[in-house]
Length: 270
Image 1 (cartoon, helix red, strand yellow):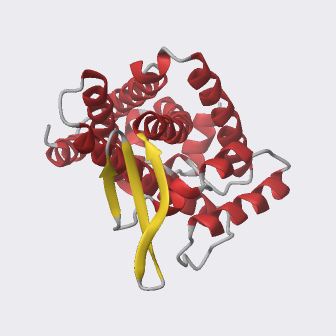
Image 2: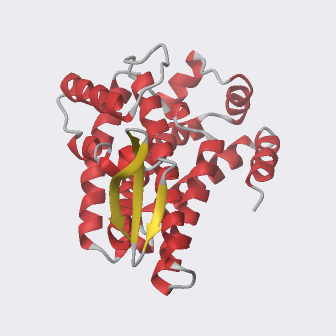
């Protein structure tokens, strides 16, 4: 599918039929959200389902508090290019896990593919958390934040809102997160991926993980991304649905200007 072409066509058609376009967009977001929760790779695992619910509770608690303070809105999370990246990363991850299950390619190829999927998921989550921290006003100058620094910023948000973000913080710590992008990586028979780092001018083993444990780590990280996408999608829907209360002329004006007049706000609140 040509995602960019699809986005461009929808943007061109949006102003022609804004009400129909918004309804279609809401339905697409709902289907996307439903699909995330019912992905087959986690539905057969009760522990994963329970973990998803705990992640969801923590992240929705954070986003809910930020919504109340007016720090974010539905517009904060609508990002077509980021969504394309998420969809393609999930598809690649599912393909890698399926290849492992069916043993359709060699194990060394599968493990390097799983490692790549893990790194891609981590980058997306890292980006999402940096964005949330920026919206919270903690990193207003948009300086680079390491995973360790993001963990510290999450602690600050825990204290600000009296919430628990421990599961998300835990997933951002640990050796695999720290070494996943190391250049020195090799496959060791029968089923180990070995990470190297330079010490005293020579490469030495830093961390190793087998195929089953790598998939477990990947699925747990995937649950965080799934949680983020699900919560953010619900925020987008809650932002779009009230717009359907507007009259056609008001909706057309809003779509052109992006601004709500007092008349529009009164209509939405009525």
